Length: 360
Ligand code: F6P
Image 1 (cartoon, rainbow, N blue to C red):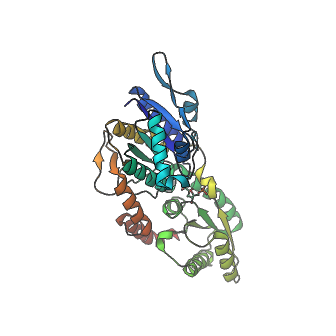
Image 2 (tube, protein in one colour):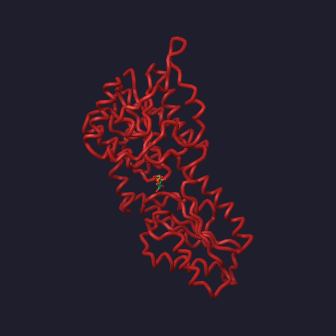
Image 3 (tube, helix red, strand yellow):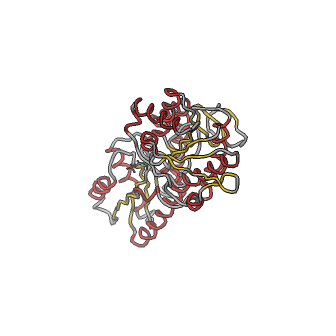
């Protein structure tokens, strides 16, 4: 192989740039040229490619712009959600464009939708593809971690610490909504890390009435004369199908008889931005190392996975990183989200067990 390409797709995640930089460095060290595809699959279809390494001093070096971006959030290449890639014609055009540009393999950094596209590209067109999990949602199967998750968690924790200052000063209850699409992972982990009173997760499959009842119960328990908590903090995942503002309005109406004010804060895209943590930079580097190696060995239609919670996969030179077929990853992702995966079941069990402790 002499030339590979890389793209970032779907929601940006802190650490994507570190992954790009690492992929370019690993490939460059092996004499392989790297092209960056702009704006995800849109750029692949439209042929928007640019060199991420250049010839210098008789060898290849990564471009300086990329080195500067390595520690920054977002993605230097840009990203998109690309409806055209949902169609076989879009995927065929992209494969043709890449082949015409002399590209022999593709790295895709992204989440569930992006890796579904990568799998279809590999199986339909035979174009060699290796996926790197990068999504704050941590909703991908077979990997315990994805690039961006740790940074997003640290951002949520910082935001909750700030909100807690106001909550304690005014004796208020806050419902903080965090991103995660259909996954409650960010809400679950940040609730434990911030010593919140509870986490509301889509995986708990509560009805709107049950969610309102539960928040009312938590607020009453926290504000009771016996407990008199200075801060009540409830972390709600965005995938719980009741808007935070409506939830808070309904609860406030119900708790008029007690002296407590319930507020909602939706963190939204704040959770997705910011420079990557040390962990995400390291994860990006180790994923890129294994992914480039796999591509050069002729492996395709796979994803690199971090310390998998499921059996299987194949080893890489990095003992913490294994390779799983994208078909397996996507099947396990579906189980994670519909709640039938043992991983989801174990998470819910742990949350249930923690419930009595969290509210203290
Ligand atoms: O997948 C990452 C994510 O940030 C989700 O948590 C969220 O639901 C979604 O993307 C938001 O997407 P957009 O920025 O396109 O509105």
